Structures are given as C-alpha cells and as structure tokens.
Amino acid sequence: MRVTHVITRLIVGGAQENTIATVLGLQAYPDLQVDLLSGPTLGPEGSLHTTFARKPSLLKIIPDLVRPVRPFQDWRALENLTKNFQETKPDIVHTHSGKAGILGRIAAKRANVPIIVHTIHGPSFGSFQGRLANLVFRSAEKYAARFTTHFISVADAMTAQYLNAGIGSPEKYTRIFSGFPLAPFLSGTNDFKLREELGIRPDDFVIGKIARLFELKGHDDLLEVASELVRKFPRVKFLLIGDGPWRQRLESRAESFGVRQNFVFTGLIPPDQIPRFLGIMNALVHLSRREGLPRALSQALAAGKPVVAYDCDGAKEVCLPDETGFLIPVGDKKMLLEKFGCLISDPALCQRMGATGRALVEKKFSIEQMVENIYALYKKLEAQREKSNARAAL
Picture 1 (cartoon, rainbow, N blue to C red):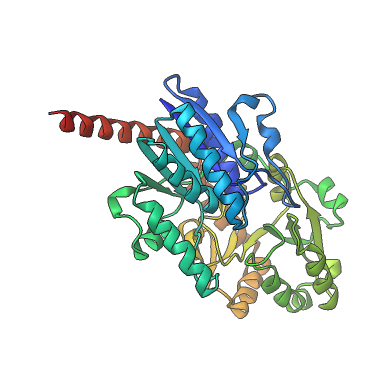
Picture 2: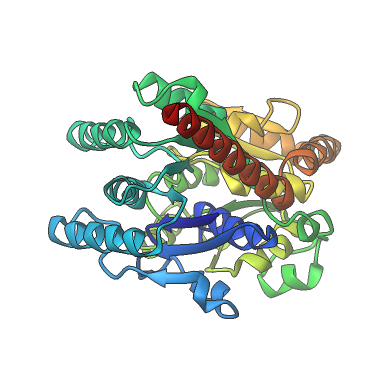
C-alpha cells in the first residue's frame, strides 16, 4: 500500500513534528510505502527539513505550496500535486494543515486516489478570524469534506467543532492523540547549570511558555499579569521558548512593564532540546486562542510539570482542572494571576499535579501508539474499500 502525506510547510511546530513522526514510524510496516510532500519552509520559526537528511527520498518539496493565499501559486501547487498523484498512484493520500489539507484533498480527488484522509491538528476557521476569512475557510473545509474518506482529529474538541460546522458525520472521525518520544521528557532533571547559563537562580520559580512569538499565542496576556506577579513573588522568572515576528515587540513590552529582567527569551530551540528546558521549569503556561491539542501541554506533563492553560479547543483533554493543572477561561487574567500564585505558594501541589499529568501522558501519548493507531485505521479503510468494491462487482 502506498501512502503519500502532504503538509504545507515543515516549520518547528506540533503538527509538523506529528507528521514527521508518523511518516518515519510507518516505515516499520513492510506492507507500506510512505513519502511526504511539503511546501518550502521560510521564516523565523525554524525548519525540520533536516530530519530527512538520512532519508532524502522520503521528502519532496512542492515550491508553490505556500501558506498565504496566493491564487496563481495555489493553482500551480494544485496542478503539481495532481500530477504527482497521477504518476505515483498512491492508495492513500493523507493531508495535514490548512492549505495542504484543502489543495491536497482536491488534487487527490482529481487523481482518483481511492482513500483520502485528513488530520485536523488545529482549526482552520473560527472566532480568531475575521468574518470573511472564517466564511472562506469554513466553506473550503465543507467542500473538501465531500471527498474526504476519513478525518483524524488530535482532540475530541476538533471533532466537535467540525461536526458543529456541518463538516462530515460522526462515523468519519477518529481521535488519535499526537504522540512524541516520551523517554527524554520522563527522564528530565532540573539542570542547575542550564539555569545559570540563562541567568536563572536555583530558587527562582520558572514559568515556561513554548510557542511561536506571534499573534493568538497569548504572550500579551502573560505580560499584562507579569508585573503584579513579580511584585508578589520577586523570584518568578518567565522562560519563553520560541521565535517569531513578534519577538522585538514582546521584548519592548516587557521593558515597558518593568519586568524585562524577569523574562528570558531563548529564541529557537531544537525539538530534541525541549526536554532539557522543560526540566528547569516549575510550571508551564499555554494561553493560545487557537490550537488543536497543544503538544507543549502533554510534553510538560510528561516532564512532571503542572500546566496552566486557557480553556481553548483541546486543552481540557490534558489540562484537567485541579488534577494536572488549572484551566482558565480565555482572557481571564485575574484568574490566571490567582492560579500562578497557588502554584508558586504550594510546592507540594506542583509535585502532585505533575505526577498525575505524567501518568496520564505515559498512558496515551507515545509515538508507537499513535503510529499503530494510524496504521490500524489505514487497514480498516482499505478493508472497507475492498468490501465496497466487491459489492459493486456483484
């Protein structure tokens, strides 16, 4: 069985890491031939292209497959994808992300690919957009759903949102959590040498955030509570992991709030170094207003760290209130400040929540389980197609 995955770009991010882990993990099944088509990766978010340095044949770049809406390039990307599918004749096309999800599925339909799967890593439409953009993307998703054999959602929240929008039917959805290598996170330690390198003292309480420095990620809300939190707890430090076009703006705002000395901006960190940085955190905060199921939350829990998150999309499926962390109504900065205070004041609470979260993630978030579940779905869809073809032949 030949399976071709399609994604818009391979920046450093959860959807991209999920896709790469899936493509590489499926290599273990001798009855599968798997490859990946991606658009070019440009910008400050960092690239994961080098993951395929040892297996370059698995990855092909589609130059016109870009994230912004650009009609002429989009048409050329569609033509290139269609041609690729017509030549390679995959049994399954499995798409990821917004632009590749739409163009990839249309191209697969044009090329008569028998099984078309789409993973919803995060919503491509919603209240985070303007009315026109929301209408366009929702309509595009409805159109592509007509010929989508099956959806994989990384969180039940994604399934509910798409069904509520009239996209697909319940039997067409399967939730498969986004797995990652657990061992480095489970074995992480509080590396005092790393703390020293970053200007963090041994007794500082470190609130970490792993996200692109960009809109909708909630950095502004964190900055707006930082000065009050620092006033109450002078030993608090904020460790921001990631980069993006908002870095200079956020650094300037931290300066204007008088808390620049309490913020550490690391810039881009290679994915394999994230466990080391999580090890020096006391808690992780995630304030995104658009997400599927944030990988940063499950990774922090694997490292035994409590989490504080906005109740957005799939966050509540791992941030269990008063069990693994605190779930905050979106934009409620008063409650955010209160819950930070609870964690800083109660080390035993941090330890208990971290241990509960670790047990949850160990059970549900291994790469092996994710890949096994995806393979099982492929086989199920293949069997259904063969059965349908046999009936048609009667």
